[in-house]
Amino acid sequence: MKKLLISILLTIVTTTTVMAEDVSAYLYGTLKDTPSVKSALKANGFEVVGEYNAMGDPNYHLIAFTNPALKTNASKEMRGFAAVMKVVISKNDNQLIFTNPEYFLSAFLQDDFDKSAATKIKNSLVSAFGTLVGSKDALEDDDIAGYHFMTMQPYYEDMEEIAQGVGLGATLERNAGNNIVFKVVLNKATLYGVAMPTAKGEKSYIETIKGQKNVAFLPYMVLIEDDKAIIMHPKFYLAVSYPTLSMGEFMDISDTPDDIEDYLTELVK
Image 1 (cartoon, rainbow, N blue to C red):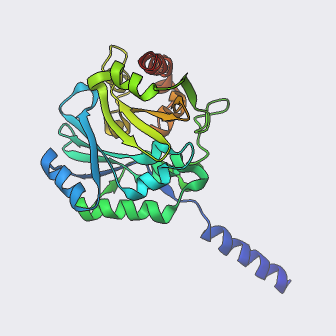
Image 2: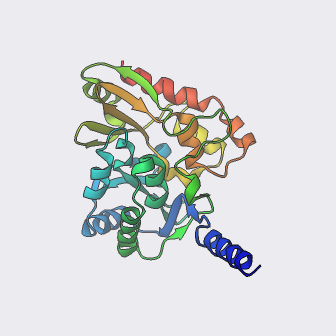
């Protein structure tokens, strides 16, 4: 009997110890202007790689940034989407909106995710910008890497190859022109952020779901690796960027995944 009680107690302690924790997708901070944000990033070891008005709206100015740790992890095969984090200067919401490294790096790096390294990047952001408050949009830490919206929906690894051939980066740059927000060259791949200022683009689908609080996931990214142009499946990337969106809200933008893929495919032809 005594052995049984000890066994039960050990099970309870072990279960409590390994309980999953919620990880916010976004972090909110005190509003600063664009020069102050860029200066704070640079002073804390980050490199600004691009900026634009998300959704074409100057009230949501987005800055993409990286650092050596981000680029090192992103240089592994099929991990290039982890090369950048983003911050939005949201005048409408009177705050800064950051992608949370602990969330998005877990989603993009999968088995290569190093929580301590992600926490170090997050702490650098706290050093630069002060207290950062987590969003209500969150997932349990042990659910992020294997996340999909529902049964039969894509996972991270279910990427879409939108083109194959030599010189795809040059083709994308030529066709996208000023809509290239950033370009990050990695060891064997190049990551692009591409604005989508079309009638069915960013402004349209984000306003439909009232998703401005999560706008830091933009712009959509294209990875050129091994003479292939690859994107995260839009049904995955939209879902992981909006983890609390309802089925009804997703149905309101049911055409968006195809619109995104069609738009980016045209740019690499």
